[in-house]
Amino acid sequence: CSTVLFSRSCYVWFCFSLFDICICSYSVPAGESEDHASNRKQRSKLSLQMYLQCSRSFHGTLTFRHLHLLDQVYYGQAKCMLQRVGTWNFDIFLFDRLTNGESLVCLTLELFCKYGLIELFGLDPLRLHSFLVRIQEGYRSRNPYHNSLHAADVTQAMYCYLQEPKLSESLTSWDILLALLAAATHDLEHPGVNQNFLLKNDHFLASLYQNSVLENHHWKSALSHLRESGLLSHLPIEDRHRMEERLGSLILATDISRQNEFLSRFKAHLDRKDLNMSSPEHRQFILQMALKCADICNPCRPNSLSTCWSHCVTKEFFQQGDVERAHRHDVSPLCDRHSNSVAIIQKSFISYVVEPLFVQWARFCDTPLSHCMLGYMKQNKKYWSNAGQEDLMDNAQTTCCKVLPRGT
Ligand SMILES: *[C@@H]1O[C@H](CO)[C@@H](O)[C@H](O)[C@H]1NC(C)=O
Ligand SMILES: [Zn+2]
Image 1 (cartoon, rainbow, N blue to C red):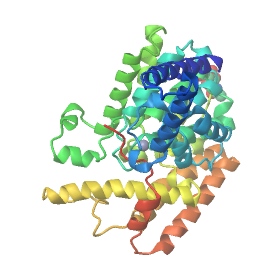
Image 2 (image 1 turned 180 degrees about the vertical axis):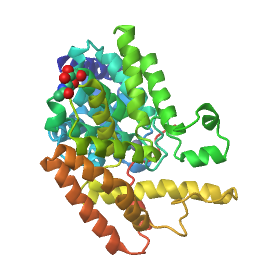
Image 3 (image 1 turned 30 degrees about the vertical axis):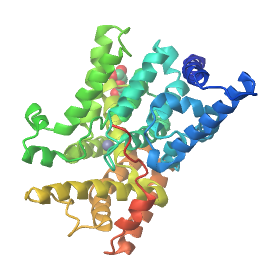
C-alpha cells in the first residue's frame, strides 16, 4: 500500500518540520554546538511526548498528527498486531492503547489496503485518511460504550466474517467497500442514550425521524462525512447513490428492535436453502446479517474481552438511568442500577438476542469460526450465571472501559 505509506511519510515530514521550527526558536546554551543542542532538545521533547501519550491523565490532550512523532515507538507494535487482524481473539483494547486511541483509523486503513480498495476504486489516500479521522472524531469518546473503539471492534469482526468462505467467494469489491464503511460508521454520532430516552425528552432527533431514530441519524451522519470528504466524488453519480442507499440499508438493519423481522427472514431462507449469493439482493441481505452479528458479537468473544465490553455497556445504560432518575422520569428498562447488574443484563441479552442470531449464523456459515463463537458464547453465559448478584461494577471501572475522554 505504497500510496498510503507515502502520504504517511509526508505527514511525518510535515510534523517534523513544525517541530524543527519550535526547536530552532530555543536558545542554545553557550559552549554547545547548535546541532548537539537541537538533537538533545528533540530527544527530550520526544520523551515528553511519549510521557503525555502514555499517561492516562493526559490521554487525548494531543491531536492526531502527534501520533506520527511516535511512529517508531508505538506504531511498530500496533503494526505487528495487525498481522493478526483476522483472528477472532484480536485484542482491540490493546490495539487501541498501542495506537493511542486511533484504532478505528489504523484498523480501517489497514483493511482498505489489504483488499486493495484504494487502487480498485481510485481513492485519494489523503481523502480516505481525513475521512476516517472525521469518522473517528464523530464518535463521542465520553460514551463508555458507543465510542470509536466499539466501531473499530465491529469493523474487525466484520472483517472476520468477510473471510468466511460463503462470503469471500461471492462478494464483489463494492460489497467489501460497503461492508467496511458500514461497520466503521454504524453508530456514528451516537448520543450515548437510547431511542426511548430521545422520544421521552422530545430530542430534536426524535422529531427528524419516524422510526429507527438513532440508526437513521448514524446513516445520515455517515453520508454527510462521506460527501464532505469527497472520498467517492470521482465515481459516477449513480454508483454513489446506490452506495448511499445500500449503506443505509445496512446501518438501519442494526436496529435491535427489528431483530425478529431479520431473524425470521434468515431462518426461512435457511429452511428453504434458497440463498443465492450470485443475487445482489441476497448478498445485501447477508451483509445485513453479518453487520448485525458484528454489532452484538461481544458475548461471542473470549471471556477476558467479552466481560470488558459488558461492563462498558452497562456503565452507559446506568448513566442514562441516573439522568432519568435525576429528572424524575421513569428509569428505562436495563438502566436502573438499583435493580440490575451486569450479570442480569448479560444473561438475558445472551439468551434472547445473541444466541438466536448466532445459532442461525452458524447454520449459514457452518465454519470453525461460527462454531467457535457459539462456544465462547456458552462459556460467557455460564460465567454470568455463576457471577450471581454481586456487583462487579467498581472492579470493572478500573480495569475496563479504557477509552478516556479525549479533548473535546
Ligand atoms: C442466482 O442469481 C443469479 C443472479 O440473480 C441468477 O442468474 C441465477 O439464475 C440464480 N440461481 C439460482 C439457482 O436461482
Ligand atoms: Zn453498534
